[in-house]
Length: 113
Length: 221
Image (cartoon, rainbow over all chains, first blue to last red; front, side, top):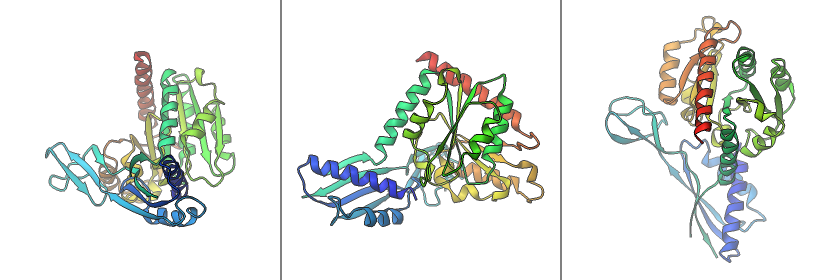
């Protein structure tokens, strides 16, 4: 359950950003979470509900954009998305050694007022 | 308003600081992860014993509670710092930065970090290591890599431990290697038993060779 500590960091970052922008309230926090990040979106939402009270995001909303795992297939010279998170190219079955996306754990944007 | 900031930015920065500290000393640093009970401590203790006369290792070991693993590893004669994390399910870069100060870093050329037994949470935290080593034992089943893609995907080396039990467990070696190939495509694979010594020589050679590469990187600045 490292989602709790990840949400703590998120709320800290969001509050700092909001204060720097002169805002008093965080209305929407949008995160980009890769499917290979090792973080479970549902657990993040649970952590948000538990931790948001008492912060600038108390009445705010958490939105999570899922970022799919993307690999580069050197044999096909093409990128492919992986639903099962494994590195096998769907066309030629070669295991890719190059991950191009899917590990994101990012505070993408904020709506503040 | 757009932000575009890594949530673990602070950890990533501290990890980079650790990396700089390690690199300046020519230290090879391993982050060893596995599920609880896969034989990490036994494997590492045997590794430490076999490295005698070849490399000078130090160890940082993380557990939620008890100093038992630290005590077992200390039997090898290597300096060991035990971190007890309380309820935290993984090690973070900041903990490593503090712990390494308790080791005679200038007299070492290999630092082994034994992470908390957990195949999920440690995947997200860079510690500043050169190599991420994931361990799985033959008793855990061949499909372990398919169940924990984030951890296996990031592995530089995968060690299949307790190979002496492969027979009694009806371990399907071919299937396990196939699964590793898909979940951990970048990983060098080692099949070992710390108890019988099978495969340990190849693993030790790998460490010596990787250490040499780390030292050369350090000399090149």
